[in-house]
Image 1 (cartoon, rainbow over the protein chains, first blue to last red):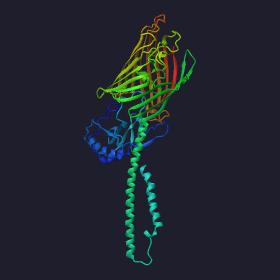
Image 2 (image 1 turned 90 degrees about the horizontal axis):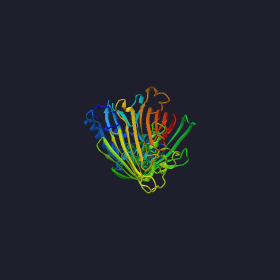
Image 3 (image 1 turned 180 degrees about the vertical axis):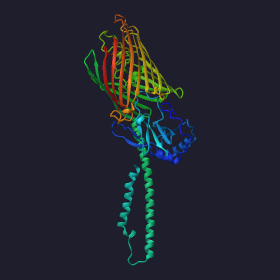
Image 4 (image 1 turned 120 degrees about the vertical axis):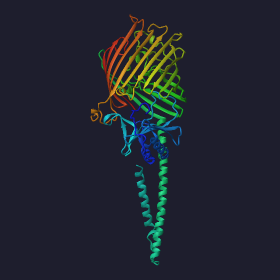
Length: 154
Length: 424
C-alpha cells in the first residue's frame, strides 16, 4: 500500500472475481461533491461511466487474480471527454470483501507543485450503497475514511 | 434511483397504449358486422398482437436509447460540476478566543477571513485570503496572488504573497493549529502573518518515490526599519512593525526570501528558509534571516502514529542597528491525538464520523539582542499545555494554559486562553 494507508497485509490474493461482478460494483459507486458555494447542497454522482466500468472491470478482475498477498491493484483512468482529468485508485480483497480506494477523482493530471499548505482542494466523499460501508480506522465505526469503500463479495 | 426515474415513463407508455386502444377501436376491438367469420377474427387478433409487439419493441429501443442519452447527460453534468468545483471555490475561516491573563482584563478576540480560489484557465489560478479586520477594523489582503503553472519544477506567482519563511507563516490558519496563539518565535521573530507584494517562482521535484523536494523563492519589497523608530514604545515587539503593510518599498532595494523543503514518505518534512534585504532608506545595511523547520507525522506505526511533532527555529540579524541587532527563537510542539471509544455513544461522539481529542505541549524561547536593555538582551520563555476537541476536522474547540517568563514574550504573565475555530 502507498504511504498514508494502514497496512492490512496479507490480502486474499490471488482471488477470483468475475468481471461482471466488478462491473456491477463499479457502476454502483457514487460520490458526493461539495458545490461551488458552501452549504448550497450536494449532488450524488457516479464515479465511473459505463464505458470506464467496462474498461476497468476485466482489468481489475485479472489483476486481483494475478496479485500476490502483499500486492494491491492500482489503476488510473482518463476521463472520456477531458483526457487530462484522471481518476486514480486502489483495489484489493480482504476477508471476502473488496476494498476500493479512490485517491483522485477527475483531477487534472498537471499539478504545478505538490499542494501548498493552503490551496483548498475540492472535497468529495464516496457514498456507500447497499451492503457497502466506509473503512473505519477506529473501533466502533469511528475514524471513517471517506474515499474508501468496502463491498462484501459473498 | 434510475429505476425509479424510468418507472413513470413505462407507466406512461402503457397508459398511451391503453388510450390508443380506446380511441382507435378499429385497430384493436372493432368487428365488421357483415364479416362474422372466426378465421378473420383470429387473423385480426394475430395482426394486432404483432403490431403490439412491434410497438413494444420500438418502445424498448427508444427506452434503451433514452437511457444511454441520460447516462451521457448525467456524465457530462458530473464532469461540469466537478470542473466548476475545481475552477472556483469560496470559503472562509474564523476564530473567537477568550483570554484571561493575570496582568490585564479578560477579553474576547477573534478574526474572520474570506477565502476565494479558482482557475480561470487550466494553467492560471488565483487565490485570495482577506482578513476582514476583526477586531481592529481594517480589512487586509493576507494573500491575493495569481499563479502561472508552467511545469512542475517551475511556476510563477505574483501578487500579495505569503512569505515563505518558516512553516508556521505558511500554515497559519487557526482551525488547522492545535493552539490558539502562535508560538512566540512565530510572532516576535518571524512576523506572522507576514505578507508582501512581489513576484516569485515555485516548483516541485520528485527526488524518488518516497522523497520529494519543493522550493519557493520570492522577490518582495521587504522588511523596513520601522522596528527602530522609537525604541521602547514599539506597538508590536520584534519585527511585527517592520512589515511593509503592503505599502511601496521604503528604499528601492528588493528583498529576496525563499524556502526549500524535503518530504519523506509524505510523513516527515524539513524546511530551510532564508531572507536578505536592505531595510533603511539611503543605506546598504541588510537584514538577513534564516529558519529551519521540521514536522514529523508518523503513520502506520503503532502508538507513534497518534503523535505529531513540530519545531521551528528562526533568526534575523540587522546590520547597522543596535536596537535590536539580532533576534532569534525556537519552539517545539508535541501533539497527541486520541479518542476513547467509550465516548462513541455520548453527545461528543454520537453524531460524528471521526471525533478526536488532542493533548498539546509547547516549549519555546526567544531572544533579542538590544542595547536598549541594560543587560544587552531580552529573553522570553513560554510553556503551554493545551487540549483540543474536534468533532469534525474543520471545527475545533481549544483550551490552553500558558506559562510565560521574561521580557521578550507575547504575554508578560501566565494566563488561560480558550477558543473555537472553524473553516469551510
